[in-house]
Structure formats: C-alpha cells, structure tokens
Length: 188
Image 1: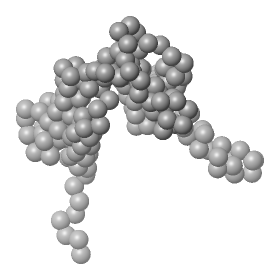
Image 2 (image 1 turned 45 degrees about the vertical axis):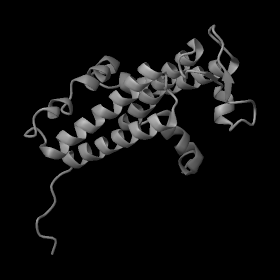
Image 3 (image 1 turned 90 degrees about the vertical axis):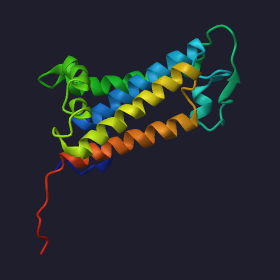
C-alpha cells in the first residue's frame, strides 16, 4: 500500500480539486456569483453607502474594516484582486469538471435553462405538486435576490440573503423530494 492511499489529507485535497458534478455545480455557481459581486463592489453598486473590503469581511475585521464609506469613483483595492482570484479558481475547477463531460461547459450553461425543473412551473403533471411548488420557490428565491439587488442596490443585505436562501433551499428540497424514488407502501 502506498502512502498516497493511506494519507487522508491527500484524499480530501484530491476530492476538493477534482469535484463530482454536483460539487462542480456549487463551485461554478458560487465562483461566478463571487466574481459578479466583486465587480459590483469595484463599481460601487454593491451597497448604497458602503464599499466592501473582502479582506475585512472574511477576517471579521481583524485585518481592516469590512465596510468603508463609498466614494463617487470606482474603488479597486488589493482585497478585490484576491477575492476575484479565489472566485476565479473556484469557477475554473468547476468548469474543468464540466469540460470533461460529453456536453462540455456549453452544455452546463444550457442545462441551467433547459431542464425538467422549469416546465414544472406550469404543469403539475410533470413531476407532481412537490415539483411545481419547488420550481416556484426556486424561481422566486432567485428573482427576489436579483430584483432587490437591482432596485435597491442591496446585494449584500443580510435580510435579502436570508429570504433568498430560505426560498432557494425550500425549492431545492421540494425538487429533490419530487425526484426521489417512491418507497414501499408496507413498512412491515
């Protein structure tokens, strides 16, 4: 037996660097959201009155203040570079997994829009009521976050995150329940 097989830390690192398709979905989604928020932060559209310091936010203000008063011009600081770099690495690891699939990265983007979730918004016969309510909760969670962010420049508002995450998590749970195989009627 080699040392590579018996070293648990090596297997965790390999698992993180070579994610499954499900984990790659999270990597790509969170990485792209982070890049989007970093660009909004640089341009001054992430919050109505503050500029966010990613270094201060992630170190709980041990290195510097997390929120600074926003200026009228775009602000670009070192923590933006580091945060964009980390999000880019996360996204590229996810995309590397998709590029190994038959449909590739383009197929992943297409799969976000063309799948069995969105037709269930209007037809309960596609996956049942659980799938219909799950699809609506998922759509409302994403719409709430983006509409509120656009209208009120509230991209980092805790209340918006709480509402959006609750709707998205509830929607994902209902969708997974709808896709779960049926169990036995008799549990004896």
